[in-house]
Image (cartoon, rainbow, N blue to C red; front, side, top):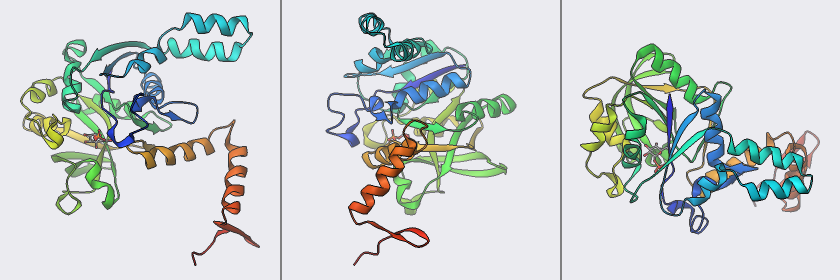
Length: 302
Ligand code: G1P
């Protein structure tokens, strides 16, 4: 199976951070966000990857490309560990790049990959979403797809105040974690949302989606939305939603990105211990927590 990674968005929610660098290259602990996505695809056995880029996204191509000059400098200086790591990154997968000519939305970005995808089911993995799971989330969807032979998309329940940041589904539960989709709506107001199940950004789609994208008019923000194309697709095919096992990190805005860094640094074998000490000390210095006999508690606001 091939994977399409749309990475052409302008990163408006991250400005000014993303004025001169792609949001997919924002670091999470010690590597760029999009590297987590590529590594998830590879862990699921996907080795043919299409990244849909746009203006100002050169850094993504450079990151996954060979860098002979840097390699020889590292070699000369005996930096074996760093050398192996940058060589590993440039050999991760067979990556192809397609440019979306104008930022016309997620649906259009996926459509740009149609020739490379051909007439096969394929995965879509958003370039700014990190999943951490013992079985890669995309692999979980691939297994459902194999059983049901139709499109399946990852969902999770989202808090009410976050509903308008997501595509939301209306669905009928068919068994544990699996729902048959009846309708989808892109970023509804919480009071009009058909449920609290949000589309998290990992999809297995059958190629019929492409002609539905062709028929999809511009929707929210004047963009061609993948959610709207899926809505048309529902008239032709069953689409399932799967509540995946694992944790998804929301890198959709500045706060989500910063929280993800805190959480994943605390899981990192090299940095966890020092960071924990540092954070506790920092919170004490800022007088945000106090030590009690039982341990540590948050200070009450006066
Ligand atoms: C996109 C999709 C939306 C989905 C979300 C997940 O929106 O359009 O349906 O719920 O990704 O992150 P974006 O976050 O790109 O605005």
